[in-house]
Length: 372
Image (cartoon, rainbow, N blue to C red; front, side):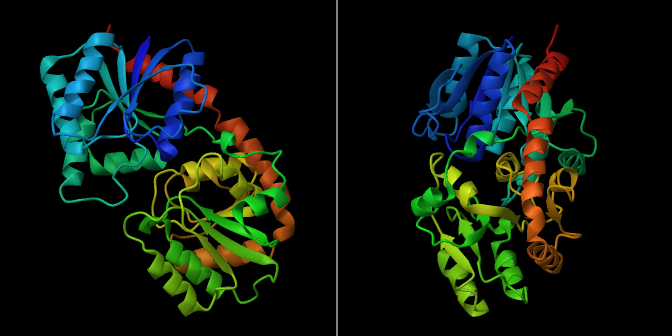
């Protein structure tokens, strides 16, 4: 079986997901060629058992898909698997052309999120048609599948629920905590960490308000908010809110992009991980946290409600500030349970979210949608 994989960004969680899946597919006997960004490839230092072709350039309207079509026509894959869209409108038209021309290749799209985190004008409509025109759709949870059918009630496209693999490669069990503290420039406190690109849906404002609302805050505990600021949130807003709440002594900000080499230090210093999310389908940071053996404190959004039980963390009763605050307070009052929860989390990641089983399920889905 030949699979051509598309990951257009070259950085972040989906790039890492794509690398891990491609590697696991090759181990299943699949021939894989990855089409990625021509200007950025943050994972170029990794050992790869598949071919990489830098082809996505972010240029004129039709140029991207013209180059993709050239790659498809030359290599003749059985499956063209997109890990994210280039443009929902462009991709919708490309899928429509595929339907009209009855290409032999099958177009599969992984729906990491049913809709973008910040949905632009008409995107609900374009994504709805994109999902109708694909040959197959992969989602990571029953919650995402429900959201997909909520957007497209009469969807006939074949779908598969295939778990998101864990990111054990983002933690280093041999990294000493004191070395990680020095690497991050942190004082010797205990830390709760909120890690990842900062966007409105992550609810960092909720997190700050929850921290302020906890009446008895442990003197040795700090909150580390670490990640690059993206659309919709500014440094001034978050620093201003922290000041207004009077929690400068509880919360430390590190607004920057953490490379893959820097991420293990975050997990090495964290006693637990924070997810005050307002909405999401699935989170790569959650998968990395479990694999790193960290208990989590989260809201019941997307796949979290299917994944997190009391043995591995604290999940709030509702997606609300008050409920998250209650979960945070409960967690802080039971710190003696965190080490055992962390062990359970690492075991759960290895047992339920391995890449080999994800690749096996993916190959089975490829065979299901492939034409005779």
